[in-house]
Length: 184
Image 1 (cartoon, rainbow, N blue to C red):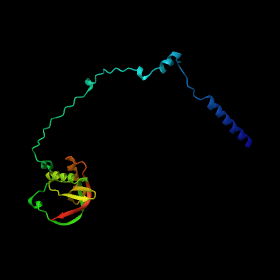
Image 2 (image 1 turned 90 degrees about the vertical axis):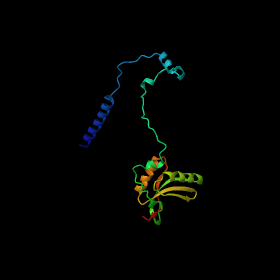
Image 3 (image 1 turned 120 degrees about the horizontal axis):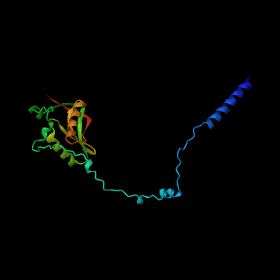
Image 4 (image 1 turned 30 degrees about the vertical axis):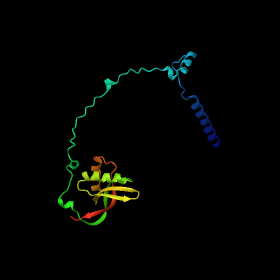
C-alpha cells in the first residue's frame, strides 16, 4: 500500500512538471520586422547635434488674459483704521492703567533681535498701530524681544497675532509669559 502511494505521488509530480514546462505560454510573433544593417547604423548615429527644433511656435493665442480690478488705496487714513470692526476699548480710563499684580498668561512676540536700534524702531512702529495693547521690550541675553498684550487665554493672543500677520508682521507668534493685571 505504501509503495503504491509513493508511486502515485512520484507520477503526479512528474506529470505536473511535464505539463507545466510543455504547456507554458510562449510569445507569438505575428509580423516579423525585417531590419537591415543600415537601420541599426542610422539609430546609432543619431546625436543631439543632428536634432533640430522649430522654435517659431507662438504661444500668445493660448494665453489667458487676466483682468484685476483696480483698487485705490487711501494713504491719508491713519494706521488705526486697520482695526476696523475689532473691539477697541479705548477710553480715558485705559490710558492710565494701574498694575495690580501679575499672572501667567500669553503675549504676542513680534520681534526677537540682537540689535537694540532695530528693536527700538519696531517699538515706535508698533505704537502707531497698537490699539489698546501694551507693548513691552524685554532683554533676554543676547536678544531684545518686542512683546505685545497681556492675555489670559491663548485665543485672545492668537487674535492679535492674526491681526499682526495681516499687517505684515509675519514673524509674530504667541508665547507664554508673565502678564500684568490691571485695575479695571
